[in-house]
Image (cartoon, rainbow, N blue to C red; front, top):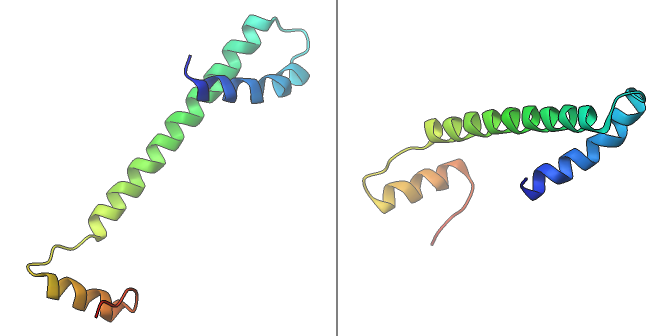
Length: 80
């Protein structure tokens, strides 16, 4: 198991132990693992959306001067 999965499982286990005191360790471990997988998939999906959003906002410039002019107009970084 990767380190991040172990950390995630260890953080969720005590909460599940409180919620389901009669369940076996194996059952609690599998529940914790499933929850970690769901969190990972959700995070991965959000990151994919952010990358797509970023790419759609990007513009292509034919010259460096045109790119710098665009940056100047937006008021962010100004190059001399």
